[in-house]
Image (cartoon, rainbow, N blue to C red; front, side):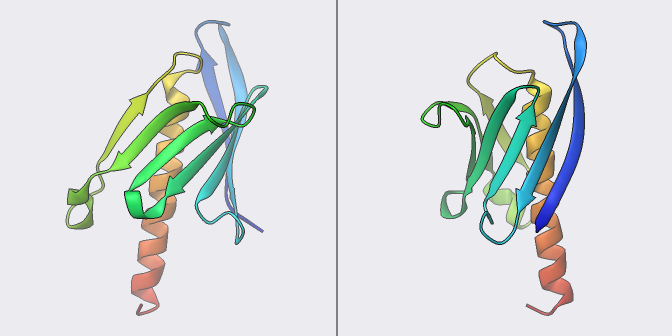
Length: 119
């Protein structure tokens, strides 16, 4: 079952063209993992729950971190704020921003559903 599934198109200035992709999250096996496809690249975005950190890695080189985002503590009493660090110029920054938006959307949805169900 797919929990989150978004088709994306990002303009790549290097190739001077639009490149299609997809961001998805499956349930229940991958609660803290998203799959990002951008052109012929396959990325994994994985959230480390107790560290408030999410890392984006290349599926082919899982030890190499492409980007890391960290949710600020103030987000638990105010609106969500993130610090995003991008460690490479291999991909357009838009990919990381869309990944962060997908994560934030799902996090907010989980909080809303917990409040509605009385948890």
